[in-house]
Length: 266
Image (cartoon, rainbow, N blue to C red; front, side, top):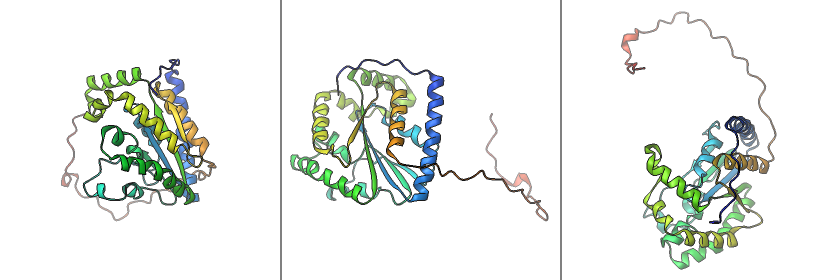
């Protein structure tokens, strides 16, 4: 993390869209299998600010059923939550049978931002590194498929994306004071990530690093890898025949003037 990477030639837009649609079709098939078989999946997305986590999650969930696939993007803990067992507020977001949960940042906040910004004590940090592997082994033993992704972005590319967010009004909300502060603590975040990997890259739930300097490549590579981790089968239902709508015998529609319509500006 932080090392310069050889810039890959960007994929052609037409090929990217074609591959993305193909992978999204596979995600829909996987979703049907998860629902039918009662599978529980947790996917953790971590990484640098502006590394592209949100973009990948958006493409993965774009065509999925929100009743089956949820995104958990938790805000800062409340005063009450800070007094709970650290993992408690995350446990309530874990999936039931037939559900997938994508954590857009997760319990690893303690190993990253809380550690670097001084939001936790040394004892709390040390306890997290001890208990996190056990917590994740418990999740796996309970039958949850747990997959963890770390999005790796170079210093130069992150800087470019931050500057883009400053210039584009639609992206300005993505640039928080915490993001700006993180720019001055690049080395501290690197050290925190290295220590986190040393303690939590376990056999039962290993870390998978995604090179995200080229967003489109990162999206395709991550979705492909995710699908390869799930032993799903295509159990798509047979083609559905749309039934004929019966005639509206005896039904009189109320006057259209009784309804308040949105003004037709366009």
